[in-house]
Amino acid sequence: MRAYYDSKLNELNDKLVGMGALIENAINHAVAALTQKNVAEAQKVSELEDKINDAEKEIEAFCLKLILHQQPVAGDLRLISAALKMITDMERIGDQAEDVSEICILLSKNSYVHNLEHIKQMAEHMKKMVTDSINAFVTKDIVLAMSVCKNDDIIDDLFVKVRQDMIELISKDSSKGEVAFDLLMVAKYFERIGDHATNIAEWVIYSINGDRKI
Image (cartoon, rainbow, N blue to C red):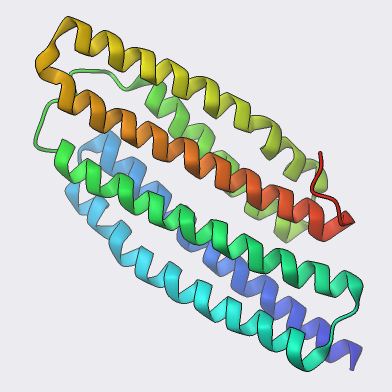
């Protein structure tokens, strides 16, 4: 019976890894859409979002079936509960990647009139946080998960810099207000994705030791 249950937990792990790959791809396409002003990249995010939603539903049903039919012991129940929480954050990352892509389609028609330095830095840190949070779950690496949580401050600090960049942009040319607002929204979505990556990392920690505190 234990061997069968372990096989189901491994199957759950594989499903989470698969969903993680989908959100990583969605983020990569969204960032490419922004930095390259590439509408085709943005459109790929919408296609992935449907798959991410399907993955969330599949994993949720799988977890509930495990709980109802297998009556997991404390450690296993903690792992399944963490998985249910994680997929919610993963699905929201997909939503926000799609939000970014939609803004990128609008921005593609205009000049950014800005080098996007701090937004690009946010994108790189945000992508690493998402990747590391998923890898931490796969490898059960509590140290890696804790590092994700600590890196959230970097994203927050960069958002403040982006906001200041946009204020300076508008002060120099008020006609750029719409572009500045759209870019600020992109930065806000990146910040939220960082928050969700932090949540995933905290659930990884919980799945290992039962404590979400760092």
